[in-house]
Image (cartoon, one colour):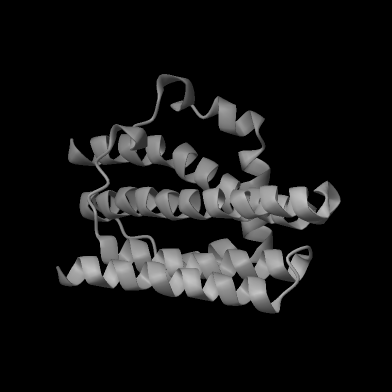
Length: 177
């Protein structure tokens, strides 16, 4: 019951914070797109940390066409990974969550990819809704910052998690032998 109330409060806070953002900022600029994405990242992180779901849905199982990662490589995932290194995100991520050897650490990393993917999917859908609204209300050109940031901050991270998960699963199988 306590968890359900906490999740409900997070959703209410998120809705209020997004409403305040819409009220106090022009929706057709880069600053709004940036603020919306990071506000949602903060709120969705709180939501997924509280949820603590095992995330055992079949959705998280890699499909045969994505196991080798060719589709993601064709979409530019390796360039995106280089962008993460260039911006310092990889270094920051490794500092906060250093790589540890062992099956338990790999299992935790596997779960973290699912949790991260869920968070980015939630944000992707919400920002997509705002993108459509801004495109209809202010014109397609005014929605470009929302589109670009949604692709860079949400769509490609989902691709990255789906690209990495089969590799982590293989490493888990190998470490169990």
